[in-house]
Image 1 (cartoon, rainbow, N blue to C red):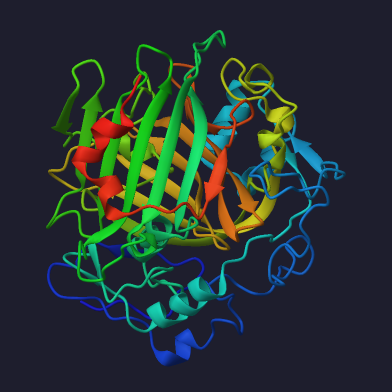
Image 2: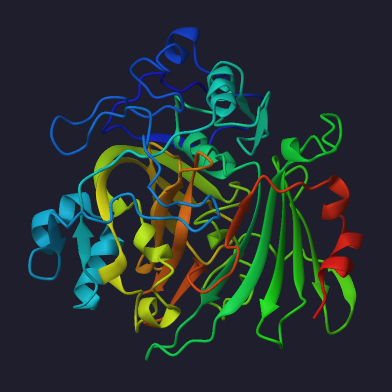
Length: 453
């Protein structure tokens, strides 16, 4: 069965029928829109006439005083909110919010959404833009939609035809090639009490390895290593992941090094709704990075495109003058330090397939058109009740042309608890891009070397 090549903004395209074979890439005529009416990675170039500006190449000026040290300064520090959405006016703005955002506002009087002027800051390196254009006419979905053929190291579907292609754009989006970061994760109790868990993360795309061989590990998208550095009871434990492109024919390869046992073992539970690392049950493995992993357990619908208030240009959340105590509050992070802007998002709905198992029966994902980053995700339980609300506080790493997250949050509406991951305010050397890593750094044997107390 073929899909209609014309995507209507209000249409719904369901992806559940890639039984065999490949799904064709777009035509040369559609690809020619990139760099013309579409940005090089597929967003609408034009604005909406008043609130969303046209894309003009991304942030034009790096803030004065930035020292190229991974301590990012706010280019918009002098701006004030245009208005603040709260319990008193939420109904006026409901069309531009997700049901989960509305539920958070209604649950917590101090959960507010400060809306600022929109800035389309994101851009990409030239080679990523060029490879994206090439992908448009060559990349295909294969293996039931759970793998990619002819993929290069960039956005695979800049002119998406269905929901699954949008999800692949999120999964494969550019995050700097090779990066190391030192971050903290918190899972506060209802009263706000918390103990941070600290990680040193490494993320290296296969093509960014110093000994890259296009014929080696061809089904690997990237390598990920996560070492816990604090607290002492967990320090030294290390997770290693080889993220495969087709995770159905070749499941994600994962290993854990337990510092107490001095033992490396396979970790098949690091997938789907397996427990997230040191998350106190507050997230699943596939909640990390908002959504990750094999898409085979869900049917995916492309509901359409909409304008929505999403966290954006969230530089205040990495301000070094703030402590974790300033940010971590009961029920949710301190919304006084957040920033939301009006952007266009792709709305994709994931519905659990018959016969499949997952604690989330439905997920509604709102994915920013300029970055392909999932920015808000509403999660529903098996009864169809709204359960958890995820928000990614986007920011642009302007010295590296990398759109990514300042922090991710995942709020549990039932328990009143939440998880926030990616905090850097109290960490030294929070981000290092362009780190040299070879394939030997991502072998199970390397875990013992990384796992020291």
